[in-house]
Image (cartoon, rainbow, N blue to C red; front, top):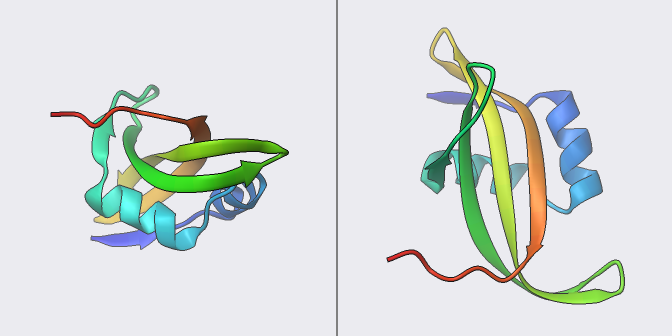
Length: 89
């Protein structure tokens, strides 16, 4: 299915520390997460191991929210969280 990344999502991605490649990867390979307002959500944890805004973080979790219209995935927004998550088994 085609993925269309909205300009709002790209703006938020830059502010929050992710990019177009990670957004597409989350949609294609991430885990499904709950979403509101008839949207869908996916999340994926990435190794980060660097500083952001003066603080060191081991990982970052990227959450992408989107809708599906006419066989096209259209992103709504993206959130990025920094910290450490345990692997799901």
